[in-house]
Length: 499
Image (cartoon, rainbow, N blue to C red; front, side, top):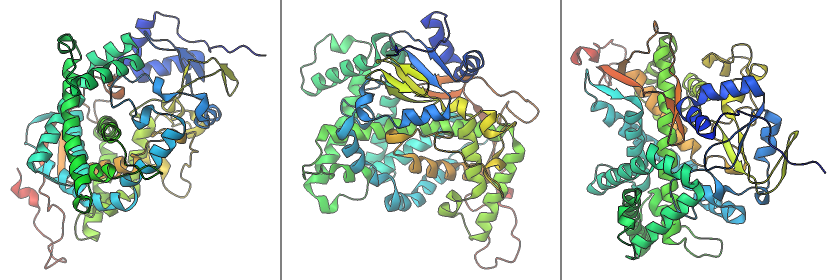
């Protein structure tokens, strides 16, 4: 019988590999791919070995792994969303949870939320200050958090909305800091999550010790407990009067039942809401900042996006977010940005047993990653221009039609992102309104042909040093909308009032 073994990979110290993976993840993966080929092993402090796979046939094997073959509770992710959160559970428990949790994020509930997504985005753009400098990642994450809180509560700009926004932002920022990730890596992410969860439960039961309050993660635990208390209050409110619970995802989740008719426990609801918050906030911010980087470095593409949006506004006598979401060119730009600069560079499984993946026979206790970043840039799949930002490749008479194992920015298999449609909808609306209403300047303009290096922040990729932009112009919400009483008469540009 063949002996399970790891493929070759970098030989430098684990700490150096960790540094390179954090401080220049795209560049490090390119370096490893060039040197070792489609499969290589990276070893990091405190973690099981990571085997990175950049072959579509092997990705298919990874996505088709059966539940007994892998254990997602061992994922190297140190944030305590909850000990039974969807992302960390396995087998039938995972499948049943996913089956009942996903519906509020798609279909008609999502369709009903889309106009409010636009309203939230529009309100935020109205608040931009001319000449002010913003970090694009923070700007986008604040807008996404507004949408997340609205999605949870089905209310906007209320006292409770602002309380949620404040507490959630504090908890997410504290829990996903570089310091917390470093502690989690050194301690072992799974063990670190469990320790945080035990501290959280002691705090809930008022059995926490004086030492608990002095530990480096005490603030994160305290903030999680405060967020959980807000969620718990709303769970009980929804369950006390189901007929008046409203359409918010939190209320809908509070009323969900298992197949035997039993309601989800309060802690289970809290865990799933926390997962929604973390996943939706961080991945959307990362995706959005890379998209804007491409727009700033390709003003020709940005102009085409604006032209398409303005034509849609004219054709529909206003900004119709449902039509914008379906715009082929905006979609193509979105897909191309995710192809070249994905928010996460791989979809991971932790192997429970020795497992065959393609021509590799990998040992148990290995993290195997389907590496989208490398596959998304392979010339044998995408052509000689694979590393160029070219939205047109997704359009026309002969568009590219990659398989689900050649293009997977939201993961794949049983673990594909459940909020992908929600994320794509809110980001496409945001991109369209940025194009129509705002002009930004930055050091990454068309004559500075320098794309920034990458880095990882809270497990998400981002331009190194952030993306600082200055607001050069903000157009009113009515910009480009034909006059309601005389659509055939050219109207003076609203820009005259915004200078």
